[in-house]
Structures are given as structure tokens and as C-alpha cells.
Length: 255
Image (cartoon, rainbow, N blue to C red; front, side, top):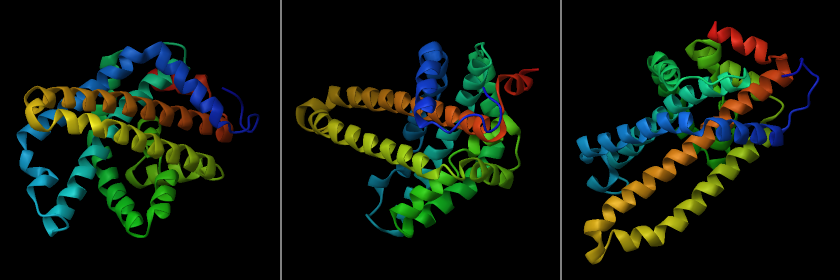
């Protein structure tokens, strides 16, 4: 990467590099994602009473379980991102990180990320209560908390400060990227809805349910892997543009 200030920020370059990383490392990147969805599936089977259809809509239990499920999903996403960041860093340095190294990096940050998201999720929900736009801006400012933790070993609060520092001045294009993701996710949801109604109702339910689970988790694997890779690429792009951090500095992490 280049020296500080020699490059203008380019969202196109972020996406291009993310595509290149995925093309070169797609199997390594999908393994942590597969483990993530297996944990989520196991959790859903072990604790089915924690899901929203077991409580009255808009009751206290409904809101509590909504928060708990959102926290669990975001935390699992953060562990995947932690693993992917290590893989992307290695790719930037010109080599491949073993899957074991990626997983160890994620587990090494398990408790710090747990503490970070214990702060992040309530903040995000509070922003949601203030309307959707503040929630988007909250997510935009703090979208790099996981890479800051993994790559810089930043403290709990420092992760938020570092993400805010790196995204400052570039939040509108990052906001557009995040908004595009939500539009894409909504399109997938509406595309899947007719299939889910077909598979989960009537005589097709017996064999439709496994197909539905496989399709849902496969989509989640792919989407979260792509999002995590783009997040990691965004982090390295912003560090290159703002601080001139390139491959040589990244390589020090592996020494």
C-alpha cells in the first residue's frame, strides 16, 4: 500500500480488493463462516424457547428476546470478521493465513469482542429507537471496531475511538455501502419468502424444512463472508489513506 496522503479514498478500490481476496481465499474464508452457522444452528436446537415465536408480540419477553437474538447474531458476526481480518491481512502481505491461525485469532479476541458488543448493541438499539438514520450513522462510525481490536490490539473503548477516527471524513460513502447491504439483504429476504412459504406449509413441510434451513444458512455464510471481507478491506484502505500503513506494517503482526 501507499504512503500517507498519497491516495484518495476509493470505495471502488475497497470492493475490488475484497473481490480479489475472496477469489484467492474463498475456501479459507468460508470455513470460519461454516463453523459460525453450525454454532448458530446448534444454539437454535438447544434453546428453541429463546426464539420470538414462543412469546406474545410486543411483550416484555418479545423485546428482551429480540435484543438477545440481535446480540448473539452480531457477536457471531464479529467473531467471523475477526477471523476474516487475519486472512485479509495475510493476503495483503502476499501469503495465505492457515484456517487454524484465523480461528485462533478470533478465539483470542472472544472476551474482548464480547465486552465490545455488550456496549455496541445497546447503543445501536438506542439509535434505532431514535429512528433508522441515527442507527445507520452509528453503524457507519463504528463499523471498524473489530479490525481495530484484531489488528491493533486496541482496548475496549479505544476500538470505538479508532473506528471513529478512521471513518471520519469518509462516512457518507461508507454509509452508502452499508445502506446498499441492507437493500441487498431485503431483496434476498423477499426473494426467499415465496420459497419459504412453499417449503414450510402444507404437505411439503416434512422435507421442505431441511431444504429451507440449508438454503438460509448457506446464504448467511456467503453474505457474512462477503461483508466481513469488505469490512477488512475498508479498514486497510483507510489506514493506507490516512496513515500510510502498508504491507510491511501488516507483516509485523505475523512476526
